[in-house]
Image (tube, rainbow, N blue to C red; front, side, top):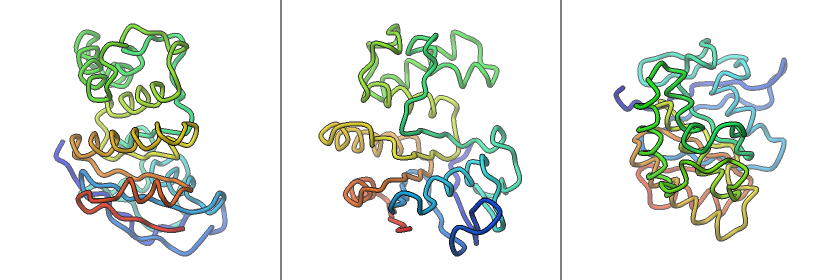
Length: 213
């Protein structure tokens, strides 16, 4: 599918009553919008609303010319990476990444080829046969990122994906994720409570920007 921008227009988020004033922004393919703010300000709710996990109270979410505001999660084509890697413990690394394409009807050998290609992107080419239990926290997050990308999402949402990792690893992974987003040419939203991380994720990249909540 052709790379398309994400457009959020007058979006009101919350559970029954609005959490805050309406939000409007757009994110171009290959660039990152970093959303920064303290715990409880609605950052994760915003991501959940864009992804379709939580309904919008009003406003719209469009990807290119596709209005996804009322579509269910599985029809939006939005990849999510969370603070916890949330990998399937009974599948090895390669099959975790191949899970999305398999669910989309791709045959097993092609799904595994795609998984290996993405594991190369995230610098884990040699770990395809590893069990999830054997991975470090940083490796697990890389697998989680590869798994999100394997489903060929139109938008990537990252919900504090580095917060469980130590500082040097966080910085290195942030750089790698930026490179991967640019390569995948999809819009990405990165949620963090750390202003430095927000700057790292948007620094010097095509159209990267920060939204403070």
